[in-house]
Length: 183
Image 1 (cartoon, rainbow, N blue to C red):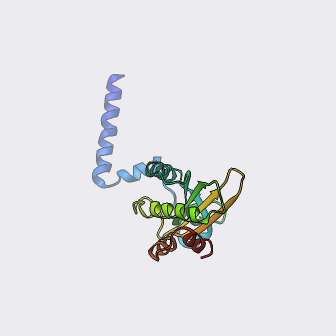
Image 2 (image 1 turned 90 degrees about the horizontal axis):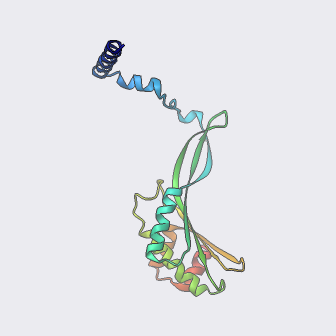
Image 3 (image 1 turned 135 degrees about the vertical axis):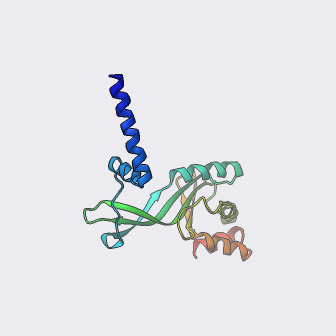
């Protein structure tokens, strides 16, 4: 029995060596682990989609806490397009940008000066994110949700470049908040 196993092992090893030197070893791997068939763009119906990015969100949350930005929470989501096949299945997702969502607890939702100053910290935080951290080919959006304990909420939604341009123009406090509230 031992001779049989030894001879079998030698034959298998010899076969693998032959496949390796003939360039066919990858073909053997594909038999056991078939890849997804190539899909060309004519098979896709592209549909706008958003996908959460939990790993990036966790890393950004850690950075947020270390830098003591007054936002309590940050979440990242990729915005782009799903390639939807004729059977309704999604073949792939093409990320266009990473959008960032911040939750900021406040005591006075009417204090535009304070809300604007907190927004400055968030814009600076986003500008300091290393370029290879976020996915997509374009600059994304920032959403800032200011919330009170009473359930009041006011939100800003602006492109990262718009926020930076407002800072570059010297806007701060209430002026910055009002500019970003109505871009």
